[in-house]
Amino acid sequence: MSEFQLVMPKMGESIAEATIIRWVKNEGDTIAADETVLEIATDKVDSEVPSPKGGKLVKLLFKEGDVVPVGATIAIIALEGGSASAPAPSAPAPEIKTAVVEAEKTVAAAITATAKPATNGGARFYSPLVLNIAKEENISMAELEQVEGTGSEGRVTKRDILAYVQQKGNQVNTPTPVATSVAAEVKTTPASTPATSPAPSHQAPKVALMPGDEIIEMDRMRKLIADHMVMSKHVSPHVTSFVEADVTNMVKWRDKAKKVYEKREGEKITFTPMFVECVVKAIKDYPMINVAVDGQNIVKRKSINVGMAAALPSGNLIVPVIKNADNMNLIGLTKTVNDLANRARSNKLAPDEIQGGTFTLTNVGGFGNVMGTPIINQPQVAIMATGTIKKKPAVIETEMGDVIAIRHIMFLSLSYDHRVVDGSLGGSFLRKVADYMENWDINREI
Image 1 (spheres, helix red, strand yellow):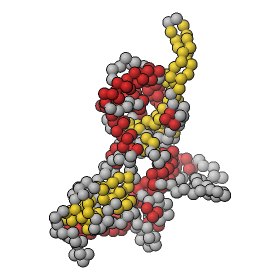
Image 2 (cartoon, rainbow, N blue to C red):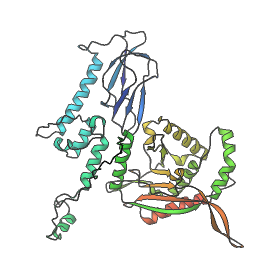
Image 3 (cartoon, rainbow, N blue to C red):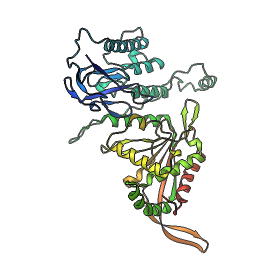
Image 4 (tube, rainbow, N blue to C red):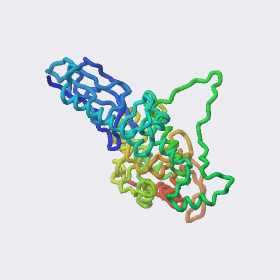
């Protein structure tokens, strides 16, 4: 019998597993080549999995809600022209049996390596990735059972376990004599204040329901966003700086160029690629904005990958990334911005397209806001927000003296990680972005 094994696809360098959300096709259904068979979800994005070959779906190896490792066989398809009968359960194909046995061995090994001698009475399933993280962080199975899961049926996801590790690390534990500075600090602690007192926990308050209240469960993406935002505030001490930019030249240039560009390229040119170009130039002037923090090390990025926050029809936000933005001209940036934005709104982004950002730009002006204080997109160290552009009277210095004129004014705000970005660097970088905006060449060719 000619069969094809459909496997869980590799969706990014850092993605080791995915959750099956829904089987679009059932056993016995006929499938055309490149037709969607199932929908999956990762910690990054939801995706559809098509079949590279046409045939009949004869066997589903996983159920909806199952967490499946990348590369594992998830379904068997009888190719066109072959037999459509399902393989007998008692004698599965050697390749399928091998894949299933190997997957079972991986899970069993991870559980054995992670579990402590104490018996584990829990019934939750843990993926090999979660179990390996627990092992590395010395988290027992008993402790793992207490971690709140946001995955399907309450399962603990990679994001859940990492958030728990971060929260655990922020708590004040009993001092140990591994660092002289810590030991010295303990010795000077007043007797009235025990050094071993744990830091107060910051649990969310209980919400009392009132008449007429409606309970709306967060969707999966909103849960991920919430966890990521809380984690970012725990990790980075946020500081925000503001500048006011006169973007009159940008407005006038775009008014002149947009019709020409749309007629020639068949698409619109927005302010976003113009903003991205100015940000890239400023990053080249201040490369220490384009870094990440790894423990006590600073990772200085060579690539300039600019994430742009995009609003989805559901009200959630997603941040597609413009890779190597410093290698693109304005036309290249415009086409990339339009493509990513359009596919973000239709949920057609690939997982790799929302990873690898080194700096993020968000436009709060799109909602009529004059400024904002955005939260850093970890592991980056800075995020810039652009406000709405408004006409305002401004004082202009001329050779004949000061005059008052109507100008297009916009506020810029930069939130940055004060562990590695001081006010001097953050403020200077933001001012440089504004300078590039204000000095936009109004006679520039498109």
